[in-house]
Amino acid sequence: MNAKPAVASSSPAVLFDPTALLERLEGDHEFAQEILNDSVDEILAFVAQLKSDCASLNAEELCHSAHTLKGMAANIGALALREEAYQIETCARAQDLEKIHQLLPALEDIATRTLLQIRGTNLCPPKPS
Amino acid sequence: MPTKTILIVDDEPLSIRILQHQLEAEYKILLAQSGEEALKMLSYAIPEIILLDILMPDMDGYALYRKIRQQPELGEIPILFVTCLENQESEAEGLALGASDYIHKPFQPDLVRLRVKNHLALHDQRKLLLRKNAQLEKLNIQLQQTTAQVKLLEGIIPICSYCHKIRDDQNIWKQLEMYICEHSDACFSHGICPDCLAIQRQSIKNKQKSKPDSM
Image 1 (cartoon, helix red, strand yellow):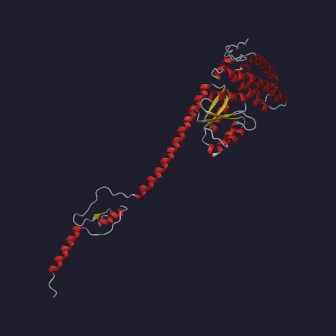
Image 2 (image 1 turned 45 degrees about the vertical axis):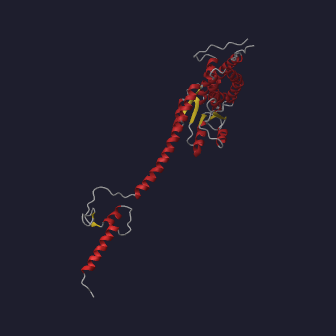
Image 3 (image 1 turned 180 degrees about the vertical axis):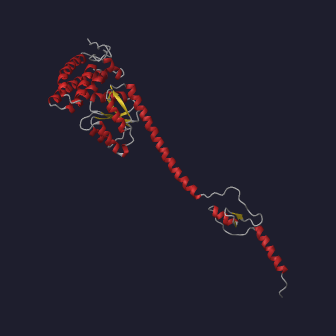
């Protein structure tokens, strides 16, 4: 059974909006699914990178990683993750590493929940038998 | 068949693939994931337009932009920076640097295509304008050279009804040929026309007849 896509909403609290991704890819379900599958590894890599940058107190790298995650999350429709990445990017620009330490667990939590939704999403309509 | 080429430079693979997906039906796409890779690509392929991410490791979009602009053969290519919607400060910086425009993440396919299409059309018109301007400048130089060679004879010229001398601006009566020589590039070679020849012959004969016999 295919998992149902989450309901689209303009609220930043929405974890994942597959309709936005499908619109961006102009209804190409297969390609959208391919992008989603690849986004899983990317999100995991970004979260690991952010933790590593934070541990090494590297504000510049933190800023870059958060910015790139923000853009990627926006493109796939992971709205809450985009919002969290934006918060971290803003703090990194301000060199506020303490705040980033506080924000990171929330980002990790949202990333985990977003990944759960993405993994449970099948955008490809079943092929007629 | 796509004829125009777009170079997309972005270190984030999913963004590149989404942009590529939105544009590949109409354009040939070249992809680079870093500034260095983009510069290498530009050494053998010249695209019609470049979409350039700003925040990249090692060489950011601004640094790459400057390097591209330093190369005369790439100097005129429109460059559109790619950024997230909320980065308005960086937009001002990019536009001040001379970027043509911005494309925002998340990418809206219609907007992306329209922006690319409009900037390509602008670039084509600019190239056409430059070509026409160069042609006009060349023609203008030719015209100036030709005008310099032409001396004008115009207006009312006072001429003596009997001797056909012409009165010049300094009130001096000049031989017709001298006046024309001074006011044009014409030259004269002297000869005698058949009518005048006949008159001259008759005149000589008359003179000889009127002379008393020397014998």
